[in-house]
Length: 193
Image (tube, rainbow, N blue to C red; front, side):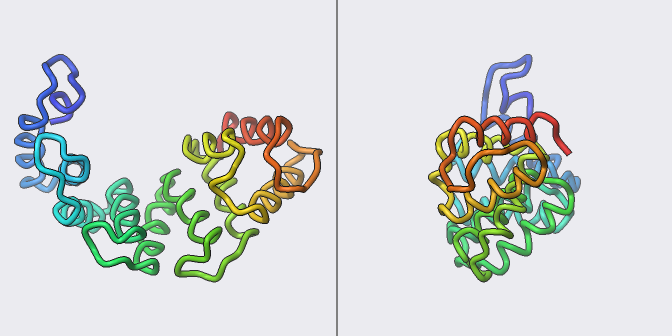
C-alpha cells in the first residue's frame, strides 16, 4: 500500500494503496490502519471522511500505534469526525508521547498553552515544547522559526527560561522569538534527546 501511496517504484495510485492497506489491516496491521485513516482524512483515493478516518485511527491507536494515537487525538481536539473532547485528546496524546511521538509532545504543549481540557499552564506547555524539540518535532521548530506566534507570549517566555536553564540561551526572557532564541531552539532540535 505504501508503495502506491508514495509512488515508490510504481505509479502513484491511492485507490490501489487503499486496497492493499485494507488487506493488511484485515490481517491486523496497525500501520495500515493508520494509513487508511490518513487517506480518508485527506480524501486521497476516496471521498474525504473524517468520521471514517477516526474509526481507522482509533483502531490503530487501540493496537498501540503512536501515529494513530496522535491523529485520533487531533480529530478529538478539533471535533473533526468525532465529538470534540479535550480530555480524550490528551489521553491519546499522552499515550503516543510515552512512545516518543514528537507531534504528540507538541500537541500536549498546545493544550497546556491554550488551557484546553487542562488548566492553562505556560511553564508546563514550555516543558512539553522542549521535549517535542528534543524528539525532532519539525512543527515545533517551524512554528518558532516563524516567530512563535502560534504560542502565547507567556509560553514563549517560559520556553526562553527553559532554554536558559539548558545553557543554550542567554538572551532576554521577553517572549520575543528572535535570532538568539531560534539558535537555542535549533541546537536542542539538532542534538535530540
